[in-house]
Length: 234
Image (cartoon, rainbow, N blue to C red; front, top):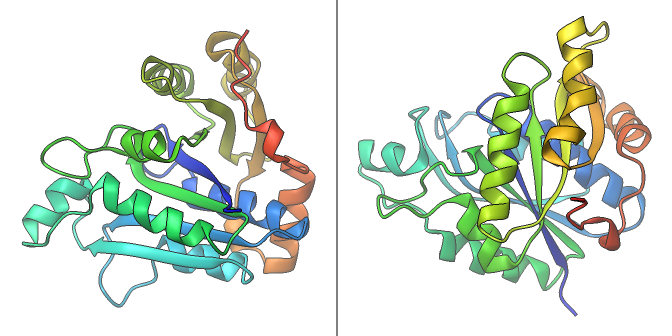
């Protein structure tokens, strides 16, 4: 029996997808699951610099990590690949790699680059296509500040229009002292999107030790079972 898949996307760049991916991995590892994290395309990172999968491996040493392509320019994968003359990764290649990882892992987390509809290829392949190919639920990572409601609602709507499951929202960097706008956004998100907010990952979580990271991830997200990954829309 092969493992299951969860795709992690964000409302944009820099919202905390990698920390959220690592947190989901840490929760699964704590329950005894074998976890792999796949990053189909990494942009804005040089060949010898640490990337997102390296950060996940640092925070959750028990996971297997895989990266298919890395491009130095901080652009959409399709554009970044063209800029450096590289062949872009396709959604089909990402799905094949994820299925291979699932042969030896209970959970495969696939972390996208940027948002849900950022292009992998010039022909228009996106992370949404990867989720479709894997029949995988999608977790949306959102920022705490301005624009959260609109960007998150649009991402959730884009998933549902494509027949994809939005399994929940995670706030990627929740401040220790949230202001009124942030608190109001948190109250309004479930009403507007009809999606559960599964956890608020505190600011600076990515800078703690792996042991501390695992403890906070478990306390924040709680145990997540396969049956939890259902679209909770009304």
